[in-house]
Image 1 (cartoon, rainbow over the protein chains, first blue to last red):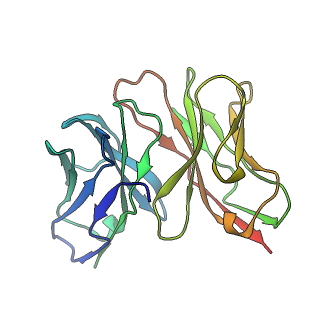
Image 2 (cartoon, helix red, strand yellow):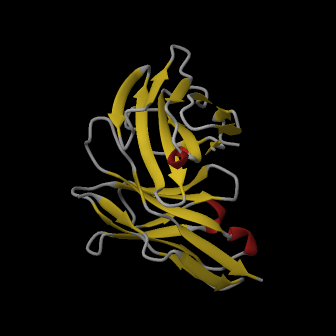
Amino acid sequence: DSGVTQTPKHLITATGQRVTLRCSPRSGDLSVYWYQQSLDQGLQFLIQYYNGEERAKGNILERFSAQQFPDLHSELNLSSLELGDSALYFCASSVELAGDTQYFGPGTRLTVL
Amino acid sequence: AQSVAQPEDQVNVAEGNPLTVKCTYSVSGNPYLFWYVQYPNRGLQFLLKYITGDNLVKGSYGFEAEFNKSQTSFHLKKPSALVSDSALYFCAVRPPNTGGFKTIFGAGTRLFVKA
């Protein structure tokens, strides 16, 4: 158990809908990262937050947004969902801004029908 | 462009035999290098990392990795494979001095260890 929690475990929704994925980092970790894992794209970095502020952006679509709250939990919002958004979404956390080791949550499996 | 390559989609090895999972990278400067493992329906788990120092890094579950600067490689190794090592392995590179940071993950190599 990495200490990173993600909810929900599974999410099934329809195209055009909006969903929110939630992540609680390990106790004491200030950095939160979001990744998308799909069969054809592999593991893609989406975005990083550190202590409430956005610090790095990867291949995140404009339809997706994230935030980190004062209690350091983070939410990833996915809107106008498309079939291609079906994937595993992972959250990871680390202690520092440019932290080395990341600790991954169990993931949220999103299925868009 | 910065990149990480895992040239083998799949590696098959018999239990008890040594295993190697290959990783090469193209990143300027001195990056941090990592290996992670993913078991079915689980998140990635940290195995080991190289930052500086000895080129041979030892990690969890008996794994080790060898850093080769001239070949820009960071191959994962284990002297004697176990069936329970069967999983998806990711090499990752963190470019140096990026301000915020974006870890680059390889595409993953699936390891099958046969009894």
